[in-house]
Image (cartoon, rainbow, N blue to C red):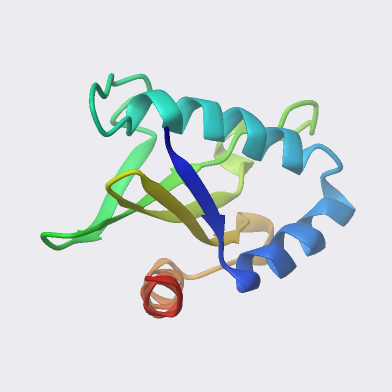
Length: 122
């Protein structure tokens, strides 16, 4: 069983995005189900394509990933979906940061933010 954690910072980012995209929490729920299969600690199966899932950094203990979070019924095209940074450590998946191209984020800045939030959680 995979355990999901949310950094307090991402909770605020989700709330802000929820004003624009009412179904963002449904997107998280769907993504959690995918993660339970993709990152299953005993028998993982690849169901998220390599073009959608990007490894940011890793060490012997954890790996930070970035993915496009599908928001159902949002009217967004795939290249407009928000990017989600999360860490996988054994049977723990912690969501660290989320941002949208609409907000004009910078990849390197978001990578650093995710890394700093990782140290808060683990």
